[in-house]
Length: 137
Image (cartoon, rainbow, N blue to C red):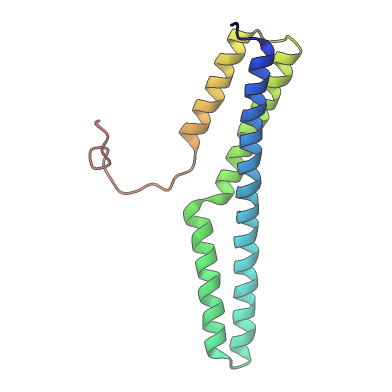
């Protein structure tokens, strides 16, 4: 069984669908945590000014929690990475479909895009040497 252009286009469609799904998830969580922390912070200020100390402290804690989640899981950076990965995959799909790139070069370009995605995927750095992380230098 030969690997055809249509097979490769289906693989690219799957890649694009995967990136789009996670771009939407990252964008939604980023937006939700950011707006939620702004609203909770603002409401904490207002409730504190109205002498509702307990409610103000609870709202401030929720705002801090939401911002910490967003910053530690890097949803904004993930959103941008998925967008930056979708764009070359879509361009590659058009090039392959229009016979501007042959199958072998298209596969190599896809590999390059996905390797870049895996290398750049934002994961918060930990204070570990490669040996402590279980990686030999």
